Image 1 (tube, rainbow, N blue to C red):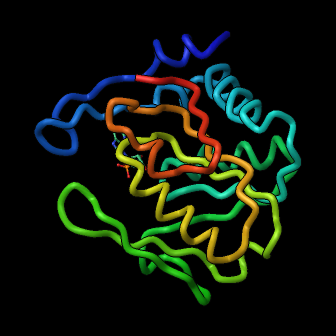
Image 2 (image 1 turned 90 degrees about the vertical axis):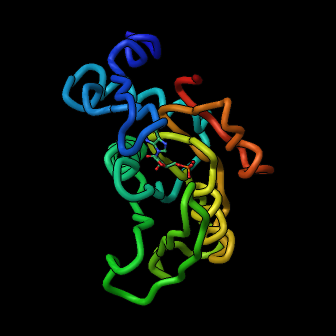
Length: 173
Ligand code: AMP
């Protein structure tokens, strides 16, 4: 079992959700017990053994990986959600999408200053989503140990938006 087994399972869906986008469908990884476990092991390894207090996952596929990583590391799980979904007091930030803007939110008491955080999402594209998440975590005084993805679309250059935080991806395209 290796990262390449994960690559073989990822399904490219052309023109989804709109023309010109090749969507990386990770559901075949989730549906296979061994592949899913391997993806979580490889994400956990990106911490290099650093102590993590909380794993923060990004709405929605990021939740799946982040929650499993949190359980494996013995850490808490914190969701960053799209606007209007979190019930308590939130901190929010807007970010640009290909067309227009979106807003993500975090409960203002979800992360305490100085807590060691691993941020997880399924895929790094332009980096706008993860950069918005980093902004919220920075505002709360989190110690961001790393940002880990299953997939990085390197040709979009998203990693540059996340500097100086350490970025890891299991699979690069
Ligand atoms: P970005 O903000 O451009 O880095 O986009 C990253 C977010 O959009 C992640 O939460 C991904 O789940 C999703 N995303 C963007 N592009 C793709 C793609 N080609 N395949 C699957 N998910 C994508």
